[in-house]
Length: 243
Image (cartoon, rainbow, N blue to C red):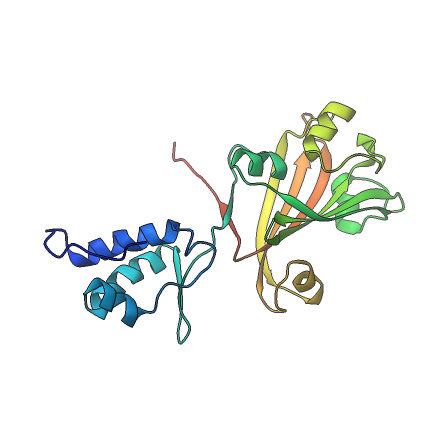
């Protein structure tokens, strides 16, 4: 990629540098978390002062497009996966709609006794076993979310289903159970040893937690879901409109 500014152009040099940096971010040479040339080298190539270059860099750092680490350098931020609260879809459907190919790294099925919170949510006897589905999912480069789902026995899931299919498609097409309403709680925690191993993090790194309560058309509970996301790879967007 050609690194050059037009010093005869009336457009201010810091804006030209900003536009050039935006192009660099998209270049295969720099995408995916790769480092940009250091400030001294880049400013020299562009024939501008470091303060002018830093003005442009700061704008992109503020927008989350670049990450600057003191003593290390400036690198291109990896694109974060985004999820919206509006127009709720299953995870697979949502990622497919965004053109993101999802890889399943782990899938575990078991029958367990519900804890008090889950038994109360489903309004079932705590001595009644329920289906538990654990899935470690992400992009080809690595996992970014660990899901744990518990299902109401009323649905009729056996554990023999092909859970590589979209979950709510299975429930709707195979068991005539339509997931209609989702209520969610968002929180955060520091990764313990278990989550750090699952999500390829260091203990103490930030993890986003999404607790999802899913209901059918009759507003009967059907799924209790916990999602643990790498905080550096996932953004949860809430859209509100004032009437």
